[in-house]
Length: 268
Image (cartoon, rainbow, N blue to C red; front, side, top):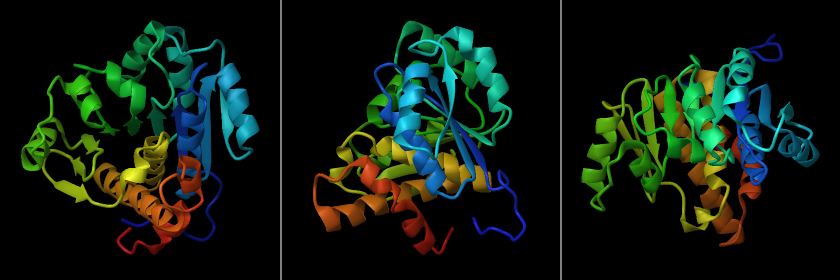
């Protein structure tokens, strides 16, 4: 898998990512995800968010374009608008900071079934998709989110856990189960990532991981390898920060290190 650029490329040819997330109460999550995607090397990231959240994201970073949606939360009324907007993008990331309002749940369930391009589904979106048919997607749950999504509680024993995750995955529905050792599988191949540390339990690191995943997919179109590479990069950045700063680094500390860690990985 390669992310090398060719001479003569134009803006947008190295990937366009749409982040659908944010709400009145959660603003930082989609900003972190969007900036992480940018740091992987994509050309354009747009964050679609409720209006006040979107303005706050603009104030936080001039690098992110925002699409401002009326109201404090996404609702079913936003489905058509977001489907039309998403047609301009290579990858859609949904769920970061989106919340669990009743109307938002309906919005998430509807829109994920109508987006044909690759999707990264994270955070609150994972909590409302039980029994929803999902295709062309990378799902990034932790153990509790996996249980809500599938109805199956994961055992402590690692090999049994990996077998269960593989059972629910498919070629077009990749699981990246977050944990002390990440499990990444398409139902056939299974990969394990051991980078990362307990300093990464701080809020926002999962948003960074989701953004990295979306950014890599936008450049490679390979769901499994992008998810594996993203898990490795995210954890390696965390390991570097633990060594340099100790416990107490933040998710925003991770963003600037993504290009350097990615550059050092020979296998992507």
